[in-house]
Length: 103
Length: 207
Image (cartoon, rainbow over all chains, first blue to last red; front, side):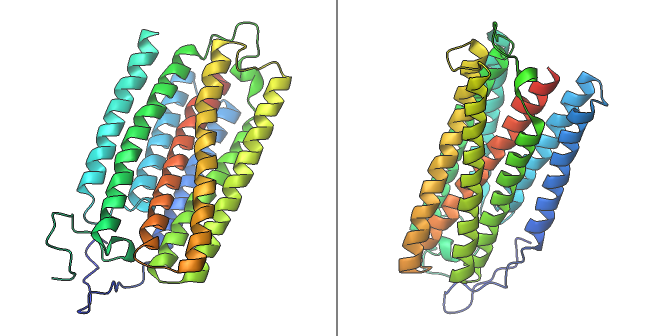
């Protein structure tokens, strides 16, 4: 979807109308993931280790969806944003594990 | 050859109104910088919370406090507000001023409802003996969730201000990057909430 924008000769931004379907689908997937996560905790059907893994995977998928659909990282020209956010996430993981395990 | 700002090293981005000037592109890049830094801020608070969450002394524990229904409704509100703000940006790309303002207005309303529920939640917790200075768990909890709430409040004020400005000035190369950037910030607040409801509330409920 990243290659669909060639500007018109006047230089004015002219794009084929952006579809909101992609966003609506992403939103529906997020809602389902959230519902699964809450249901898994409310029913208590899983052992603790499996539950923690499931919840973290659900959260990770949701965050990736947010970044690449809602925050437009799927569009071209987003090398630096991906780089900075990736660096932020890398340090975030180090900080969380560091503080958690040291305290 | 599409536009007149290709002489810079600015990255090639889609030809939208918010990326039509170098200033707009730089604003977007700057906010991504900011988001990278905010990630580390919240990571420190998450790390602190995880380390201290079982130190609740004689105050209530997370299992006794948290109410899944309440958190579920708050999550739905914030996730929906993330969708409405992206719909605002989609309509901005269509140059539809009325719909842009409408969707950003809905975003603000959903955010305000979320914040109201969070204030009620904290109020209820203090009645259950869960005070900021009560235990290490309480301090870490209120600092993490409260910092997120403060970000929501800031986002509400920011987007409200932009709605007022865009009503007066319309969608221009000056106002479009502002709306786009505010919507990026709002999505980021939602990303943080995804981790809060997972790590704090859901994992707090199972212990």
